[in-house]
Length: 91
Image 1 (cartoon, helix red, strand yellow):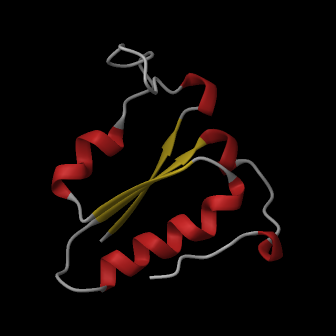
Image 2 (cartoon, rainbow, N blue to C red):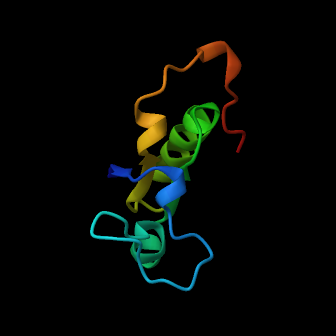
Image 3 (cartoon, rainbow, N blue to C red):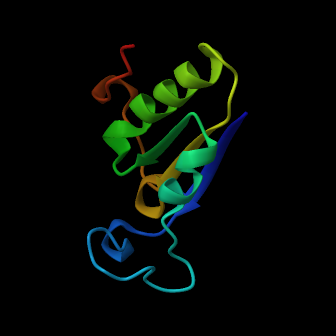
């Protein structure tokens, strides 16, 4: 199973601050789902979308079957991506 979820803008991420969350929309899902998934990926830029998707797919179909989680930041969701300008995942 591959789960793709949305996330807030990069500036709204809690990151290394001591806050548990930055508002009602921001929750650090990667930390929450890390213990129940084989791989949890946060795509922080449009140049990383292919890498994140390929990495998640690799872990989803390799070895023992377990779910993977991909979080895509809001800014990445609305960005046009040049397929020739992005790198993939090398296992």
